[in-house]
Amino acid sequence: MSTSNNDKKEFLMSKLEILGNWLVKHSRIVMPVVLAVCVIVTVVISVSANKRENNRQEDVTANSTLEDITGNVVPEVPLQENDNPDIAELINGYYTAQVNGDVDTVRELVEDIDDKVVMRIEETSKYIESYPTLDIYYKPGPKDNTYVVYVCSTVKFIDYDEPVPGMTVHYVCQREDGSYYINRSDEGDEDELNYIMEVNLQDDVIDLNNKVTASYNNMVAEDEDLKKLIRDVNEEIEKNIGEALAQAEAEAEADSREGTEAGSETGETDNSGTITVVTKVKATDVVNIRSSDSETADKLGKAALGDEFDLIEKIENGWSKVKYNDGEAYIKSEYLEDVETTEVAANETDGNGTDSQTSNNNDTANSNNSSTDSSSNNNSTTVTGTVTVKENVRIRSGASENSEKLATAYVGDKLDVIMKQADGWTKIKYNGGVAYVKSDYVE
Image 1 (cartoon, rainbow, N blue to C red):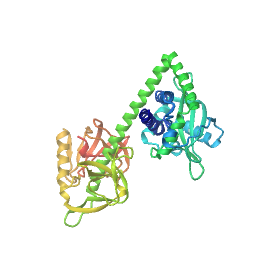
Image 2: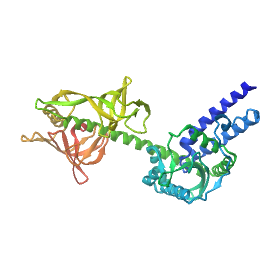
Image 3: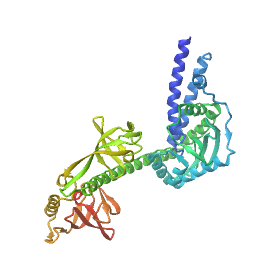
Image 4: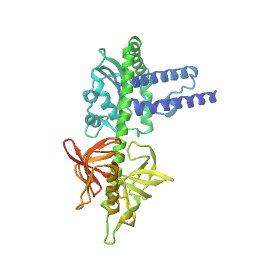
């Protein structure tokens, strides 16, 4: 019998762990307006509760609740309808910000919210008219002045007449100044996460959740238009987020290229025509090593204080690309210091500033445009017609990487050209005025 009990304990714990990771790290901030996701939240809570009850009935003597297994005391406090004005202000402010797509306010009210969630809020606001009702319930959280908050809402879509129900879980904490915030951090301690997980499985929470789920399911079952609207809204949001992420990545790559070029053009050159290049860096603190130059990228490991890395590139956006485990990885530049440099000839760099490169650029411009006038004074090339962008590139107000960024030109875009200059820049017509792009990225 004890073996059976242990097996059931292990089974229950594995299921609760999966549920806890999902609920605590995601559902407490899942946007109820994306109702397909909201329904997943409610269904997961309900199904998991049923599994827990079945396990209890099958083996009463095992009594395999999370409290018994972990030793955590989780009080059975009834759900309380909100009577805390500070929590009401926080929740109402958060949902109002969602309706307005006010991401600055969202960032103030939510701790450790990642960029993709912010983008989803901004996109979803395009389809929402209002939240007609926000019924707020809570239970005490695992620490003083913390709460597990349940928001039963209805959302009014712009293209649908009836408000649609949903339910979301939030973990609310208090700052040192007394203000409250929604805790989105996934770095909470295990006891804290287990506590919230168990509270989510208490009977009155399950009952509330089932009530909202039933109401939502009835609406969807009776109205094909609503079902189609929800599906279309979710698909459109995912598409727009994907495109925005792709564009941001392209812009980061363009900035990275320009940053590399700027580094070679502004490197420390001595009288012998050599440039000092950093080849090795050292960690000045414990810092995450990531798969790309973003704080939301996958963590590949941690650099300890004093760890050294071969430097591949210092990027303009504040990241450094380094060699790591026979590959490449990224670390925030502010946590690195230079420890080894080397001298290279200026004409061996990848910059655009050498005479030979300028000459090649002019030759390319002459071969790609049938109507050209050469200037013998400055070796620049006057061109009539257009050029085509062959790699994503920044459009700038002047012929320098330090000039203001006006926009990004993407592969295939046509630009009205005024002149291909000898300094590696192309002057173009832009918004009724003049702007510049790197000649290497147009043809």
